[in-house]
Length: 411
Image (cartoon, rainbow, N blue to C red; front, side, top):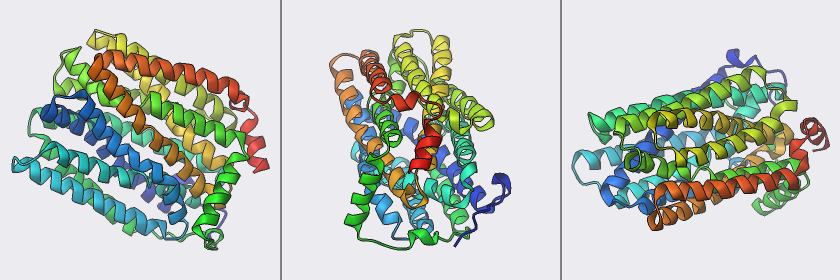
């Protein structure tokens, strides 16, 4: 059984390896989202089909709970390595198709789905492993550091993607993906990871699913966290598929400036995550989560109405700060409240609720085709604000700063 006393975070070699793998995947996630969106627009000239690639990328998240169950029956390290190998292979194929001039829209669609299938394992595998290799009291800081680095690479990823599109070509972004995913797999192979014994008593998959659902439903804090996850993924994150289109059509900017725009949003997320890592304590988690989520939605509404590039940069900086509050605390709350035996399933449930979000992509894509992309973003984000207000009232525990410690003790 693993020791309950782990080294401090930055001297913990297993945490550092998991964190480094996140550097590789985080950089590519944001680069791919920009490059695939602009390639899909170039190939189809259809805002709906751009959204459909995002739908395919995130729909595998619906199976995240099942992945959480699978990850408790197998070694998470080898599942993570297999996912990284698949992502490297997809990047290599798309790069080859671009180089030979053979790329078609369906190639991007299939590639997005396969990459999304690997992404669905992020919460129940890599983030659960982080919780297993650090002390419970360090979980919040570990996830904050994770989110801080993800935000940093959100600055670099879109900028690199925009520069590649404007100079060398889209294939260079995917070739970079081959390199980064391969490095991530090598780092993962070097880990000395052993699954905790508490998770080695394997039950039937059906029993695991039923137990997990019952466990989560007993905690209003876990249910409330999942409710916010649903709202943000259905009504906030879909705007990202339309963001490059709005920038190109409404603001009239180049691919490089679109990359800069997304990087500024990443800068806001980086600052927010860094402040959380330094100052946040468990009693702050729910307030950061709720108000950060609301700030993100309000900033998206403001983005949809902006017609000045420089004002848009300011708005997106605050959008990124709000997003960091949501993204950091989402994992931190679920991990902190859940028992070690249930963490994989709790984070798998998060993945399922993220997986409902792609239907928001279809909705915003249809609205963008019928109306226009900026108006579609305005309508969807405004509904999201109303939904967040409802969550504030339906789950009063989410406004209680002492709720986290009490609910954690109960579960």
